[in-house]
Amino acid sequence: MAFEIVKAPTAFALDPSSKATARIKDERHLAWIRTLPSVISGEIGRCEACHIRYGDPMYRKKRTGKGQKPDDCWTVPMTPEEHREQHSMNEKAFWDAQGIDPLRIAHALYAVTGETDAAIKIIVNARMR
Image 1 (cartoon, rainbow, N blue to C red):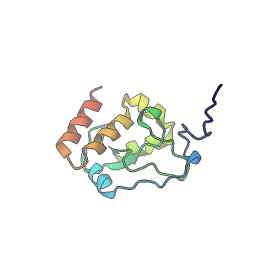
Image 2 (cartoon, rainbow, N blue to C red):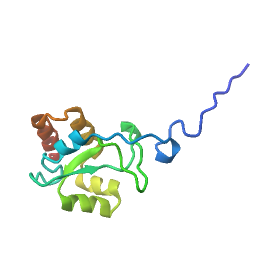
Image 3 (spheres, rainbow, N blue to C red):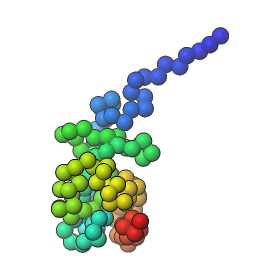
């Protein structure tokens, strides 16, 4: 006797249109991210909290569609100019050119929210690669 397991078409999808979920907001985390040095240049004092939009199954991160923002845990600090450049081209290509995995950094920063010394170590290590 054989059994068939029927998988829903959206079971493993990273596409945001497959499952409607509310965006997770964390203003405290965003405010803290803005106080950190840029993950690209190391510049301090004028960073923005930049959301990472592309998806990656390794981090269980869904791709974000137009008009949507990712959860606030998927942010890294960048200067306004760096942030504009990130959005002016293919985002994954931008990060590959920098040699930085922004999802790994965002994940690590969220784990230490509020701990600035730990965050600076994460950023410095990311920039050394």
